[in-house]
Length: 102
Image 1 (cartoon, rainbow, N blue to C red):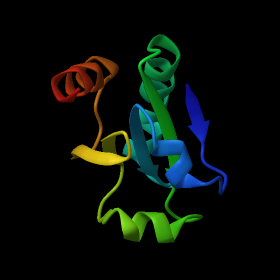
Image 2 (cartoon, one colour; image 1 turned 120 degrees about the horizontal axis):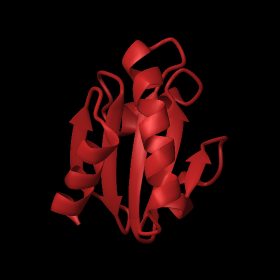
Image 3 (tube, rainbow, N blue to C red; image 1 turned 90 degrees about the horizontal axis):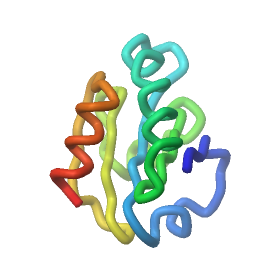
Image 4 (cartoon, one colour; image 1 turned 60 degrees about the horizontal axis):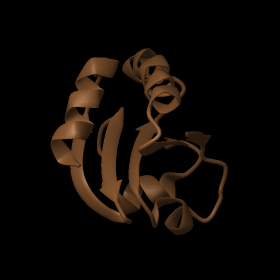
């Protein structure tokens, strides 16, 4: 499932299961490159929810999650951070990262 964050109750969105949060910006080249990989991952896996958050629109969440560079990916399980990574990654790399941290 892919959610392009639009101000919903974030804590509710991340409260259950495995969630990958992508902090991105529309002007960021690596963010644009990773976007299709995240979309494909979200459509091919039922065990993870992908939430895309534009840091320019939702600075408060970026600050709360200590995002200092983008793309910044945060993997959560039942609302708790279990892993982080920054920069571009292919779908295969993302899949391995998720599987290694489940």
